[in-house]
Amino acid sequence: NSVRNEVMIVQRTCEDEFKSLGNIRVYCRIRPFLPGQNKKLSTVDYISENGELLVVNPSKQGKDGHRMFKFNKVFGPAASQEEVFLDTRPLIRSVLDGYDVCIFAYGQTGSGKTYTMSGPDALSKEEWGVNYRALDDLFHISRNRRNTISYDIAVQMVEIYNEQVRDLLLSNGMQKKYPLCHSQPNGLAVPDASIHSVKSTADVLGLMQLGLANRAVGATALNERSSRSHSVLSVHVRGLDMETGASLRGTLHLVDLAGSERVDRSEATGDRLREAQHINKSLSALGDVIFALAQKSSHVPYRNSKLTQVLQTSLGGQAKTLMFVQINPEAESFSETVSTLKFAERVSGVELGAARSSK
Ligand code: ADP
Image 1 (tube, rainbow, N blue to C red):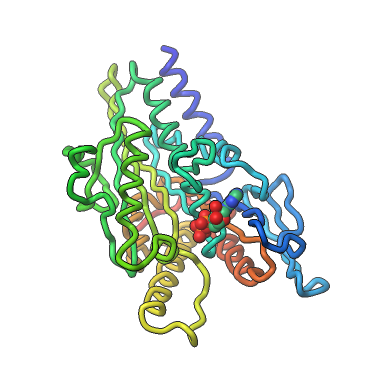
Image 2: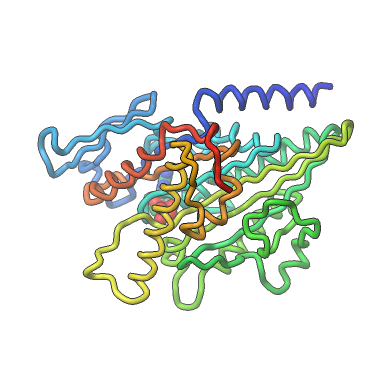
């Protein structure tokens, strides 16, 4: 029937795209200048249609201050949330066909990670980031297929701070409004974190607002906390083909990473130093895992950080990975920008697909 045909076409389109782009892709997004910032001193000199990006050090003349990078795509400062999502959608839809997908936002604090993943205002649909759009799209497609495949969608939301995983959806009262999903799907990233059934984008918006409120702790403002912890929204999909009885499962992890900026060791002390060390460790562990998969290494070092342990079942094998590399174009960010782009360069242009995982 037509829905099954549509499923086949989407699967084939995704397959073709995966083949051409590989199972890991890197999209770079340049944040626009914010009001009051000096637009004349931009580190981004040139962006090409095929993903090239030239960064310059505005305070240095000549070749030394230039460096060229190439990614699967580069979104300039004028790119809208919708444009960014359109290039992400095939990956997200593949979750309904049984794939595991991880989407990360990487970059220094203030470079637009949260803007890309969530958007500046959950109440403004036009400004929604990837996560709300993804859920909206998954619900839309699953409704269209409802006569052929019956889907159940459930979400978890955790924060990883100082190598500790915290369930953000665990609070009194929440379970009445958003029931816990009792039949736990296999391969949960964090088996003991609560998992809630969701039926609509409104449910997801409600849950995420509660999760975000839980994220701010004590005297630490949400912004400060969110720049020093990783947040992971995991969407678990189970589908049952009503004609054949075949079942499938796919998981989408949407990860807003902690700020990647290097902290001056001579200045940071106490809690700040400890946080910085944990962030550094987990971001380099993530880079090492992706690099090992790309090299088809027989040992993939998942155990080196909580982040890579949590995502282990969705990194490698047939899983798809997308890294958004966020860039702040201001001149003072030049050296952070170059180190962000070098990290991304290491994980880009490599193929995870055929890699053997050691899990
Ligand atoms: P991060 O999560 O990396 O710390 P944010 O997402 O909080 O950064 O972005 C920092 C600031 O820049 C916020 O005020 C955000 O609204 C703004 N911003 C980021 N990206 C964009 C964009 N593409 N368009 C408009 N404003 C943006």
